[in-house]
Length: 171
Image (cartoon, rainbow, N blue to C red; front, side, top):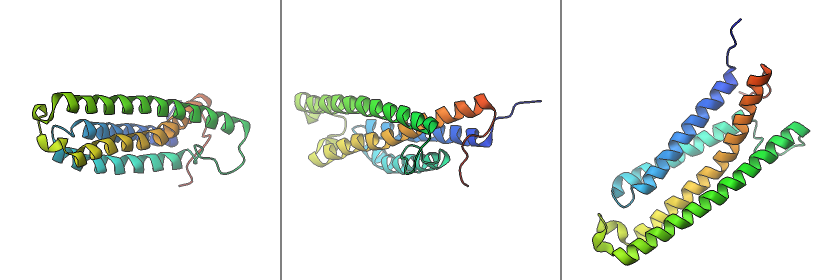
């Protein structure tokens, strides 16, 4: 008898992969800000909206265990606590990276000047503010996705280990 992967596990794996891809595109959009401003400004909202939709669907597939609203049993509480801890670690790391990138950008523009930057238009005050908004937006997308992803991976591992459906989405 062949072991098949449950549909819920496959769906969560696809959502995690798709969310990772769209978060990566949002990071690429921020990185392209000084080199291809038009492409960056086009890619940024598209990737952000798609990553938000993936996070929402992933949260539905894990029965919204990342933000519990009812009483949880011991197993769900342990999963929730572990995922919340992982989300906190992700928040700390992304905050450190955000401050390092912002500091490097500010120092680079201060000491290199606008003449050294490939696109002089990208160094105006408004465009620098948009760049920092892109960095903060990436962080706002990443943290809820990291918590949901952690829970999805744990539920997938448990379902595959037990060979039965633990949690399925209501749809």
